[in-house]
View (cartoon, rainbow, N blue to C red):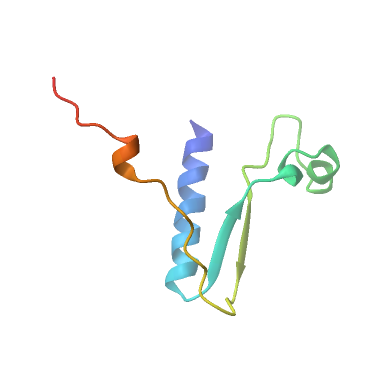
Length: 79
């Protein structure tokens, strides 16, 4: 799928920016689905926004987010 290829590209762009010392974040919010925003970007009827990548210089390290305990989500599979 083309969207999967683009997602991989976005992920690589985030990693490259962070490797160069920039802060980077991929956000998909209301603007990605707003018809006015899409029109301003010149999108055709068969085009869509996967998200917006924000790149800048961080003023402080990003705080760690709460993450779920993997043991609560995963189980061991046996055939």
